[in-house]
Amino acid sequence: MIEKVECPKCGCFNKVTDNFCWKCKRPIDSEDLERHREKVSREKAKRDNELRIQESELQNRLEMAKDSGDWSCFSKEELSKISESVILTTSFQISKMDIIKEIEIITSEVVYGVNVFKDVMVQVRDIFGGKSETMKKVLRDARKEVLEQLKIEAYCAGANAVICVDLDYQEITGSGKNGLMMLVASGTAVVASPQ
Ligand SMILES: [Zn+2]
Image (cartoon, rainbow, N blue to C red):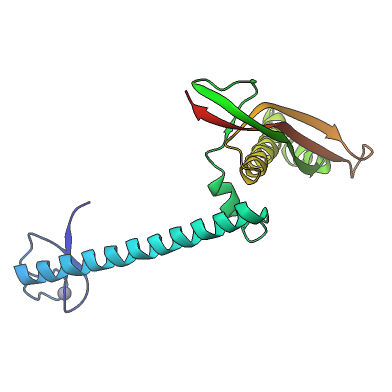
């Protein structure tokens, strides 16, 4: 990042090598630069401190949730973020890791309407190939969602990996206009540690 110095008079930013503010023509000297650097480092320290506080609050909430098993105080976004590192594999083992504990079988579900596809078809029927591309996207989103949810389930169960992950598409109501599809992900939540 190119260092810039803030003009104390008008607040606009100037190149460090400039002797005058480009806007208000106020002379810029080394003291301005020093002041500016101090301000930047003060702001950085403040931000770092805020992040540290947020981090330790998060740790406290995590510990409480792990003890009680109640994760309801976390938003879906927070859970997605903290469970991001959970490993998913369709295999029964994980390369370069030992499975030291099998916790339980976990599942996650995403329900989506079949009419999603119908709407899509009407919109894009003129575009050759577009139909299947858009349908693929709907399926891809559902898959992404269900796997993200599986990671959350695993994390909340105390696992850091899920093995034997399986995806299953099911129709849960009659076909037709209001048909519903369900995508189910299942697997075994485990604790794995590097070999
Ligand atoms: Zn200025």
